[in-house]
Image 1 (tube, helix red, strand yellow):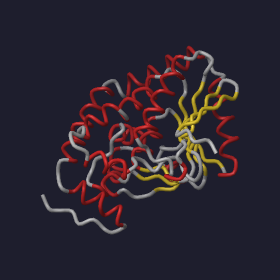
Image 2 (spheres, rainbow, N blue to C red):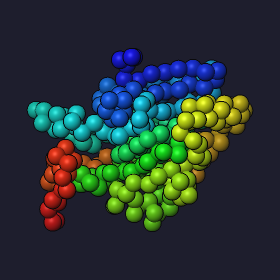
Image 3 (tube, helix red, strand yellow):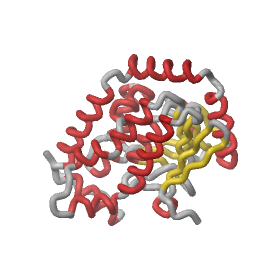
Length: 264
């Protein structure tokens, strides 16, 4: 077994980046998110890489932030704010995914939750196994969707459906995700790896100039203020995290009970 929290493999012009904490459903700790940032930075400058696939090892794509790590950070003396953490981690990863001028494709199996779902949403395209399940989950711990999800989800699914998913934290399956425009294509779970490679090769064979400039055009038309929004999102998350609901939500999650949120 490879002990690295992140794996990279090359198959032709396609680089596959694998989140590799399968015992934690690929939940993000600091080591994993910084390894992802480093891998994305390298991929963006490697001309031999024409497409990037982001996937998870084991039974899921990613269950989101590792809450045990989060609790430890909150308890540490002089710990950074939630906003500072977002600026140093997920906001950097999202910015790289959106500004790498080559296709970045999420290959989704099992669960994609919280900021794991946000990372998939930030990708250009999403191919999902028929057993994939997605949820934001932030509202269950008194937070807002971060990792760019509060911007990108309504772009993909529409304002009303996006807000419904953010408030409810409902789980949706691959079929529903495809119906509302989140997922581009669904494949049988047993064929996900093979079909993802073929899907990525299709876009890796397109003119790299056309890919780069088209992605730049789409970013400019739909997300021209991404950097500013990620900063706003971080500040809003800081506001949400300052209240009592966050730690009550996290405690309820860890204790497998329903949270008792206080009235404002």
